[in-house]
Length: 288
Figure 1 (cartoon, helix red, strand yellow):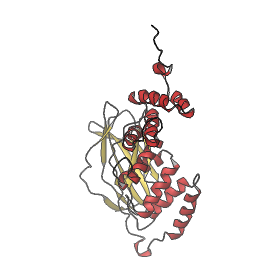
Figure 2 (figure 1 turned 90 degrees about the horizontal axis):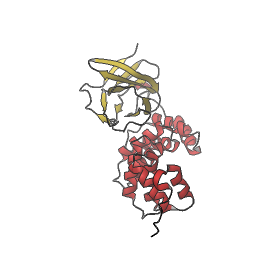
Figure 3 (figure 1 turned 45 degrees about the vertical axis):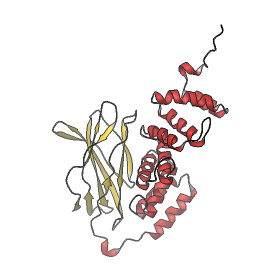
Figure 4 (figure 1 turned 180 degrees about the vertical axis):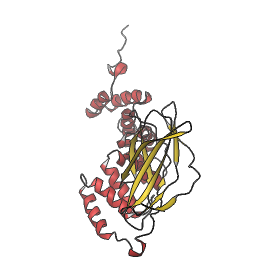
């Protein structure tokens, strides 16, 4: 009796094999290939599988299931998936609408270079939807997106004309930024996305981020640096416990405020787990 042979992709298919099947309209074959790879933890396959359920190609459209696959890929640091998770939180499609979570995922994707995500987080900061209204931060994110999105450059120029800091508050200390709890899965490159919320400031402000490893009773610097944005990606070393905080620094360096420390632990399954904020209060100081 003749036995039907399995397709060649059954043994050692790749994401590209699935893409080739998708491009040729063989959606069922793409579904089988990406399903197998997604279960093995392939982030790109998880994203592609989410796309099939999102648009209903080869399967009945299922936004809830699409969101689940997008989220799995997003927590591995895939920027296209992070963006799509943000879109679904933003629109309430496949998941309950949550503007603050949309903002967080847009920020993560934007920190990895996704220009549409940078445009979207700029819009949220411009309107104060899910994040504090902060036109200066919105203008900075629009600046990132403007290289690719013409509308972003127009918005950036409009905001630069609109931003007008009060002379009476020019010498007031910046308001403290607040870290968003770190709960992203560590990527294969062993890096982590750091996101914070930035309230409107009395004067032009930059951010200084400090990340430290915690080994026994010692604390050592892993990263420190300035940024005009509200999210960055930082490579980690081989430690398993970390703490980070963000300073809001007046552009002239005369004043700054610090957030509390935000701690997270890298576990053996390569996930980062948030720990409680250190119970200190944000501080405001005069520079120099």
